[in-house]
Length: 150
Image (tube, rainbow, N blue to C red; front, side):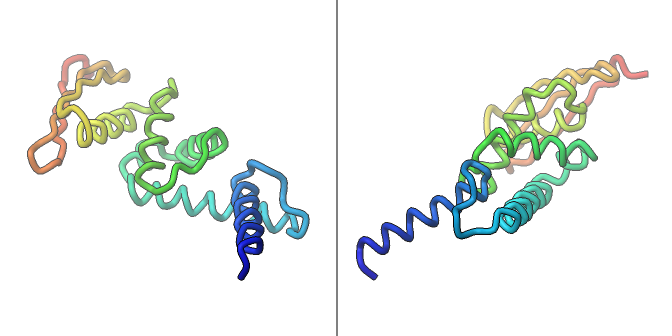
């Protein structure tokens, strides 16, 4: 394969990837409906990977998980790997005001696992403080106060 042919193939592949991510229109030789179906399947696969990587977060969000992920996906490019995707999704979620308390605890635990080992969080319903502490084995211990609980 000549150098020009390789460059043309690389350009065509890059255009196809951008189209699958919804960033550009479908290339002329592709059926737009098939491309939309393939893009939807890839998005669903990505969401399932995230659910497997972070089951407690998916469980805490419940039926909202799919909606939040779709909104996140529409606003962000694929960062290049599941770990990076999960980290960006968690950062994106932190800006959402209606995030359930259990999801907030899971995000704080993940932050303690990879950042500063101590986190304090105030739950809203009912109001009560939560202390998260990373242990030497990288697990996170969660201490929930009953103060304010009814």
